[in-house]
Length: 124
Image 1: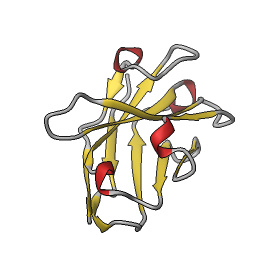
Image 2 (image 1 turned 180 degrees about the vertical axis):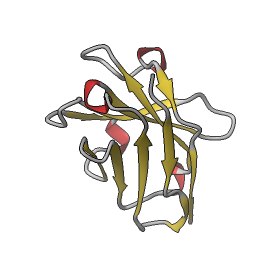
Image 3 (image 1 turned 90 degrees about the horizontal axis):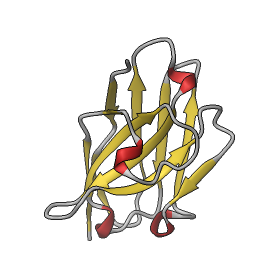
Image 4 (image 1 turned 90 degrees about the vertical axis):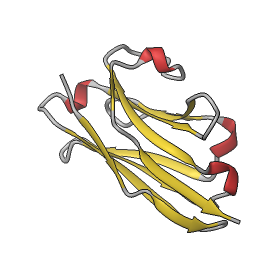
């Protein structure tokens, strides 16, 4: 089992940057693919990005491609989501999640463990 704790959210102006992190407990972090999702008020939780357990492969939803970068440091049991050129529509609670299965990762049901979320607010 793994516990996930997000941090780094906050308030930023449109066009600005923010990095959110997700720290995982346990010694098996490198056996999980890690994903980020977000949920805006009144909307369903949506996929943002996923990174393979080795860190060699990433996949992003179209709306964040070229603006967000997902990376991980398995020695620190941490995954990072660097967000640039932020837009008001990026405002949401951002959640990290871990999954044991290979491949996929764009659906919430792919994931076994979830963090509590961190708020990101982008002002116009």
